[in-house]
Image (cartoon, rainbow, N blue to C red; front, side, top):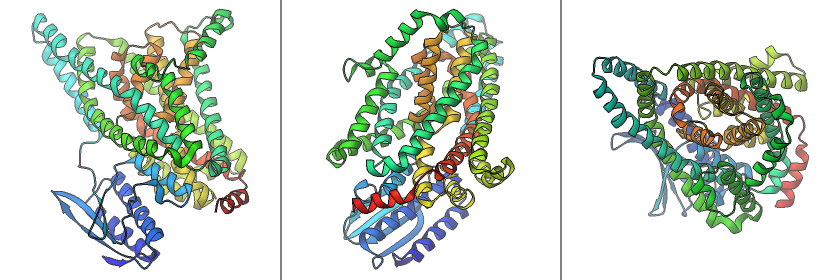
Length: 528
């Protein structure tokens, strides 16, 4: 296809690309990512070079992999840099799409900008890989029953245990930098503070209030099972310990939190640096670009971690089954069902709030959001539901296009109440089953860390696994308990993703009623 950069040609190119990828049975998540990427890229060049500029789109294979190649004649313009975006919504949309998947390859030569989009290599879905690991662990346990005790002990101590230690050490090594870069990049990618102060402030405040109230409510429901002493709730020593915990959030220097693995101090540093960069603006573009480039590396590391998770699960379950550790199995069952019903509770809370504010019935609300809910619960992918999410918000819930374009990616990254609930029940379940010392300071710390990690964990494969190690390390829980937790998380991810997206849609519909869009237009005119 060869045409000028008109809106009609761009729509046609996106349609042809979608048809080609669909014919090649491309994964739905990759199809959405590439389709959005092509549209965003061509619109970028339309703004920079004008509608009279020419582009071509070629489809084929490169080293056995499917590819779509865009060629745009004109001056060198890199669509992967934020400097070419005219509005903060464009910039934030771009940054969000980067965090959802892999960037296309850009190059410039002989007066032509070339961008190549490639679907990721096909691999087994995470749930299938984990199922294979679980079945292999069970078979391994059966076979080990026929081995002498000395041989069985040697295999566990020289093979399974080293694999566990290696994986957990790797997670601990990358967890701190991963969260730090994710928070810094996420805050800086908000864009101009004037636009954010009008639209983002309302969304950010509402997201924060809801996730805090929901997580606190779930923690309160866990109190009767935690064995916490009522005297510890009122004790002055607990208040003193809580005050000391707050003071300890401030690090002694920039490097100590990473060497000691102090999660709250790492998050504190990242938040301060991200907000400072956001307020200073363009003067920090070098640091911002470095943070962005390091973010790509983190995404790659998280991909490696996600591929290693089945090996970790296999080694851990083999240990558990060999030692007949029924406690871990009970922990897994409690974690699964509590998280499942917790997510249902989260959706019911958002349903009630939205119905009261919008003055509609629950049946009407669910009918309007049903299509996005089906996509999210069957794919466990916020990226796959991205387009339908925006369409549902604008067409069915009456959210303005401006708010939807900004709020949907903003919410998919920062507002994940289902993840916060999942983290909380994982920590509480292990702590209760292991008879850990639970007091009010521990519970407050757990709630705080769960809320922060739900927003800070990058939406890439392996991001949640690394976040579990941070959570357990901060709360003093044994990391070897993560085998069953991570295995069940792969299943619960479908429900959690659907919960997050539905909750986000309800909040966007509520906030849409409260925003005065004339103020945003006045702010845009003044900035021009």
